[in-house]
Image 1 (cartoon, one colour):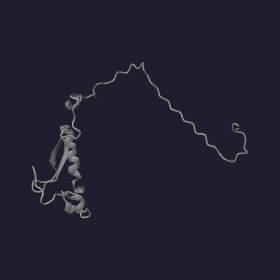
Image 2: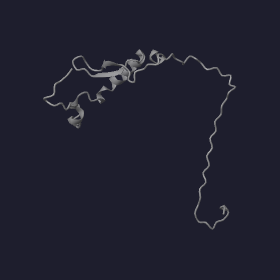
Image 3: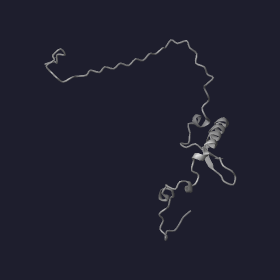
Image 4: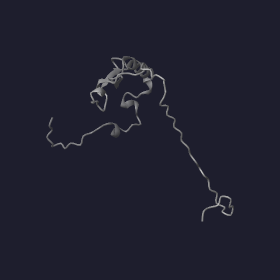
Length: 124
């Protein structure tokens, strides 16, 4: 027997939720798309070959005597590289550069050891 919404004998409340989605497609638009913001794809993408990890470039945020090396993508433009260098240099005091600056870090986690038997013959 179908449920009669006007029947108040059933004390259980039922909440009805309805949803609606609307998508508009304007196929007849005369708006020209500006090509000013469109850039050519990097050569790596054009050839269909791209490394899963970008090549890196090393920058020193410290002094020659006390280097604070960072690595950035080699694919960055000179402007992007300069912006990263300025920003990271401005906040370089918030980074830990040595393990001594991280006393709560367990050395067992930070240092990698290879479990090689002493009698094993090493091959290069």
